[in-house]
Length: 385
Image (cartoon, rainbow, N blue to C red; front, side, top):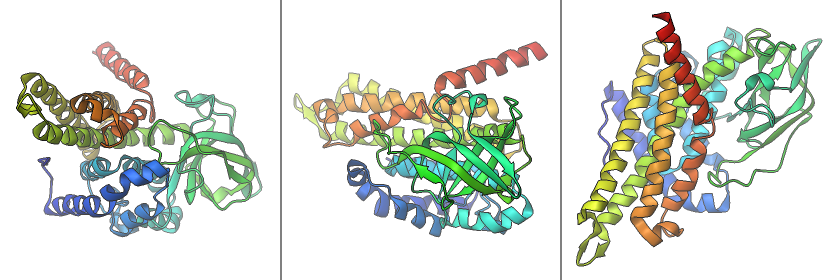
């Protein structure tokens, strides 16, 4: 199904066309098999890096694409429409690269960013721990300064790309203060003492490896700290605002994919002498699915355009993440219903889409956390008059 997009430039339109071609030729044909085999598609990330799709929202002088965030997110949506695990992986890599791009020194930018943006290095994001998910202040992993290094000990949980990434953006405690005691570090995967737990057995996104990252006296050069000591909480929350938009765009792409399959099936499947799409009950279901996808797309584009304009977008990012991921869960569930018994089998992809949609309501801040963020901002604005 064609998605009509309002894009700011001819270059942006060309990027969408390139993305669709790569998705059609390289991603979609292998997605189902790789997901079934739980195979991590490292080569796909190299390909996306080589053609410039990992670098879009970053400055051109460091090898970035210099594109607005609204363009990057629409590229991400197209990737998710073809292969959700890859799109989530791109979003995670962008999240891991964010701190380097926005908080790195000039030397760090010149040394690190070109490889990150070219796909030469794939990133992981080490924030959550078993007892510190939504509550970032509960992080216990410690980084102790010893000469020119920090010695890191602790265990990070739910890390995408664990064992496959070339670097990790680590948030560790450098002081006991709950909110001003965290610091951020760029950690190369090759460092001694860095190991990984067994991959989690997940409901969906089987092509996206998730595991613990274990730090056992890992010596991280002090030159790899991003920002000042104690800046970690601010860096993490700032990155998550942008990351939530990435997940919103992925969720919209997944919902669009489910709608595409359901609409095609409704045109082809015949019952009682006519296509099931001719029955009003099914038409209403498809209409609601389309409205949910298009409404969700509008929320993430609104937030992205605020971000591009340099205006506050914390609350709109939470709205987008909430609306888009709830929509993805509903639309993929309804797609299974449209296909009936076939939708419950692996012959069609909608059962996989439904399983993949669930986690979007959980990671990058659960939707309950998004509701708290939104409500608190509403109340703050009312109190401020």
